[in-house]
Image 1 (cartoon, rainbow, N blue to C red):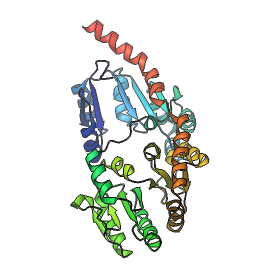
Image 2: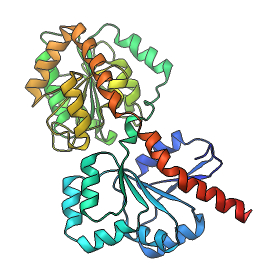
Image 3: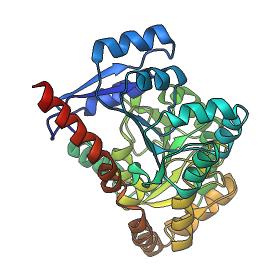
Image 4: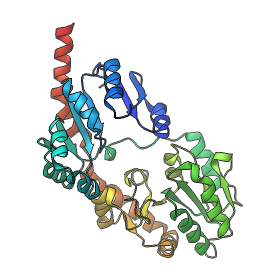
Length: 356
């Protein structure tokens, strides 16, 4: 959009999202917090910014915002749309409201066929499957100096990452390390909690298993004496994926629906995950079937699978290649989304020409 001459306003609702977005916004884009979804605040926000087109992502359908945009004849598009069974059940309890709101959305572009079917069942009149934009996103950058510095410090130690962990999974990672330590005494476990403020809890899990830990947020480093390194910082997963050939993705041993596996696979990591992968069902199914990922049920199975893979580096290499092959059918969501956006962009250009 910026390349086509438009100004872009990006909104977020949380401080952590704002920090992440703020660090990555290109020139020509501005960040603001989304107003509270109350008519007075939404109207003031729209009066100030006067948008020509509104895009909302995933499931961010705020009723008063939808109504206000429609009343001003500002097209609203849902991109990367997602509708879980749980969300569908909630919307289905108010079918008339759901139908009225969804009718005001110019088009719903969904991640999967299942998402599309749920939107259609709720009465959305214009729905199309575009795929998941996250699967086309560039991998998270990493400071090459940090990659080299930490890589040198880790050296040839066996290493694995437990990424985006939730309460319960930190303990499982520490338990798995304790089970593996006899066989792999130089093992390094890196735990990156989903919410970095939980770094102290992760360190406590290490202590409970008799492991030595260091916290990145406090300036700690993965020195040879450290068993478990707590990566309690924001926006550095790309760094830790580059340092490890093995990644366990959190939110999956506990019922949180799992985390996006695309990035570690693209960065040549073999992926392990628990049974709860509802947020990314299709891609996990493809990765598992293609041999690019493996499911574990608990800490004991996690430890056993890690041990098998660490003892056979060629199996890790085979998994990473299989994972990258399995991702190919999921590419192209950006192109499909832009194709739908093009008529709206053309209309904006025409309006700008007439006003000019």
